[in-house]
Amino acid sequence: QRAADIFVMKGMLNTLLQTFGIEAADFLPATHRHFNPLVEARYRGNLLAHFGQVDRQYLSKEWGIEIPVYALEGDVSVLLTSAGKTRIFTPLPVFPMTQRDVSILVKENLKIADIEALIWKKGGKFLKECRFYDLYNGKNIDKGLKSITFNLVFQAKDKTLQDVEIDNIMAAIHKILETEADARLR
Image 1 (cartoon, helix red, strand yellow):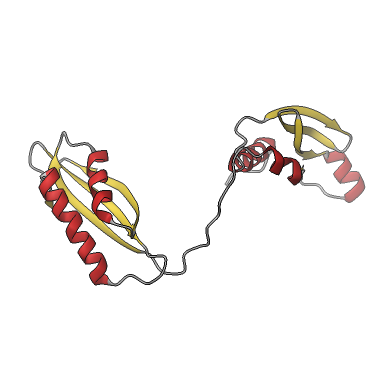
Image 2 (cartoon, rainbow, N blue to C red):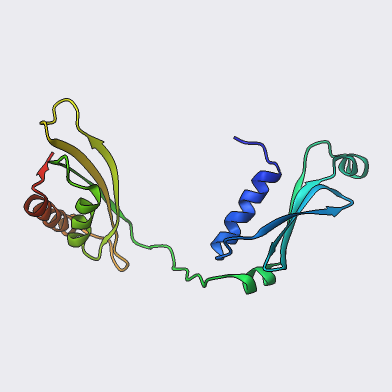
C-alpha cells in the first residue's frame, strides 16, 4: 500500500477528469498560506480544482495534528460545463450472471482475435463478456497446435438464465469453433 502524496492526489483527480472526458488538464503550481505544496488543475483556462498538502507547521501549531494531511477542493459546476462527453449510466443488473470457460486446441497460427470474433458471433444477446485468459503450447500439446481458454460471461436483463439456455449457446459456440476454426474442445 502506497502512502498518500501529491502525486497520488494528482492521479486520482486525473482519473476523475478523464471520466468526464477531460483528457488534458493543466496542473500548475499555486500558493496558499496553509498549503505546501499546492497545485491547481485548469482546463481551457477554467479552474477545476486545487489540491495539496496542508502545511505541517500550520497543522501542528493550530490543530495539534502531526501527520500529513492532503486536501482537494473542486468546483463541480466548472467540471460539468467543461466535460467533453455525456455519460449515460445504466442501472446495475438485477439478475445474476453465469460464467463458463471454453478451452480449445487450434492451429498455432490462428489469431486469438479471430477466435474471439467467432465466439461473439454465436454468443447471442446474453453474452456480455469474452475474456481470453490462457495460452499454452508446451508439453502434451501436439506440435503446430496451441491450447487457448476463454472465460465467457452470460447475463439477461429481464430474467435469470437457465442452464439449458446457456448450454444451447455453448453448443453453438463449440460448433462454430469446430467448423470455422478447426478447433477441438479440450
